[in-house]
Length: 262
Image 1: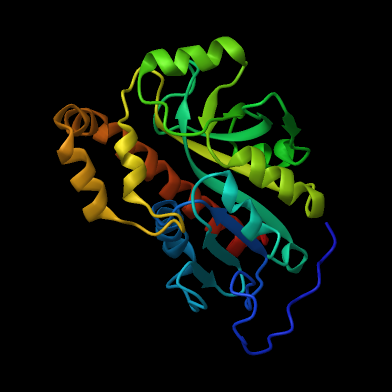
Image 2: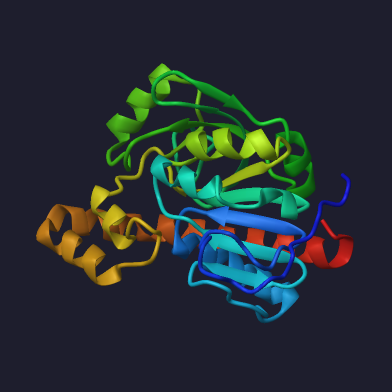
């Protein structure tokens, strides 16, 4: 792939809060701060301490990688339109997803090759083969959902409608936007809960609309419904396996950037 233009490095005038002033070889986009933090933990193992924090939602390991989180849900795709994706050599979306198929077990990473929209649309990802080989991760199919699929019955109902292995809320809208500028962009999802796991919808309260963590609000929501808190405790080992794998992915990306320029 040819080198892409670098940023101007001009001071931030506050007019474009989503625009990075520190373009790197790789841009990683995540919905949530918790996902970005896990990736940064892994990246720091091979790239050292982050060098720049241009904005509250952005971490830069200069000159290798910039990590940003934009907020959950398809509505945040508007932020992507304000990013200068052409400043980066490669773009990767990475985060958690719910498992639907038998092979989508908690803690397993997948490179998504196509995404089904909740209303029947479909997005193909031409760069999936490259990212799958680069990271040694299996390809999979994702489907767009509006919220956490709480019960196994809900997950099975989605499987009956689509051939998807996993489900998330952002990929369909995000990739539809990103591919217009960066057709070789990758999409990686780590399974946080398999189809047999009950995952309370109150977990959505742990992040605000911008992706920042809201732990007090999250636990308050769980405690209001005791069955939800019980489900959370049962799902916690699964969630931790997912986070551990996202850290591993970050470390792997850091090694590839440092040793091979990715």
